[in-house]
Length: 371
Image (cartoon, rainbow, N blue to C red; front, side, top):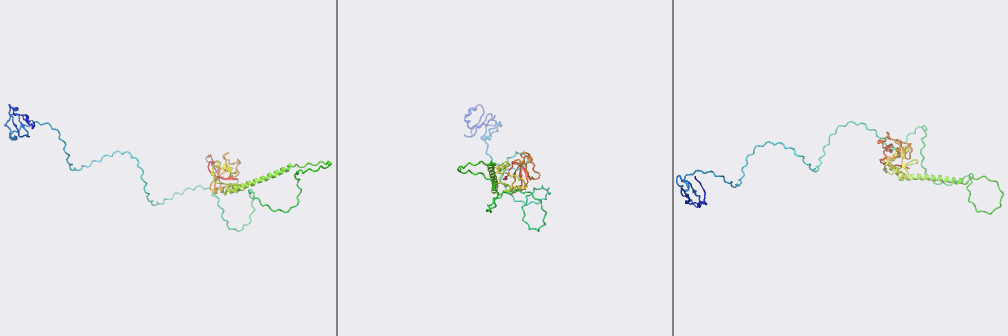
């Protein structure tokens, strides 16, 4: 059995004596060379220098694999290989969740106006609308030229008696007239105050009993009656003067007979307007004929606002009365009125055309008082 050992350190531990009794060759090549130790009988003599003349021994058993050496340095990258064939298109993935809405971007610049479109075809003619309300009476036109005198017509029927006009202003005191003839003897005047007592006269004879005279009380009552009449006339003059003062305070007022219609431009509900007219010493306007209604209409037209009248059917539905409870003696209802729409129209308003309409008392209208 041939054993090769590389022993540079252990060579000194062996000597020729340790190989006695069997052929051994120890060749010391140099101080740092390996020693070849041959154990066993030599077949063709001792080996020569460097073993050139020796016979190769049998191959020994394969030794165990040694430990892996350290990893070498990474070499340079190789050349890029040719591109591989294109892969097949993958399947479409599922739709992801909707993202949050982004913030609104700045407003864009306004675009140029486009050309006008073509005129569309005319539509079908509509139905005739309802007839409008009667318009306000127009102003009186200018006076035309005088025409030829016509034949005298028949005497017409006498018209109704007009309202009594207001009391005129007191005229200036006239000149003293000539003295007239002496009138008849008047009634005996009242008894004068007793005079101072005279000297006592002689007692006369008893005369006949005279007739009973008039009592002085009747004369006093007559004077009182005259004073009362004068006071009544004075109050009437003061009332008339007060009316004219109110008209002067409200230039837009109207005088009709003994009535004065005025407004201050204030607007309110029926109860509010009624109270304010009472505080001013009057009441809500209540025309009792066509002339007075025309005066009310003129004020409505002037302010272009409807007014509430002093007329309601609050006490009994459908029976309109003045504020003092008397039934109305004149009306100028619009066609189809009063209709008490929705069951809550108990007051009366006047339109610009002078027509009456029932209206809810809670709405606001122009104030119009009469004095």
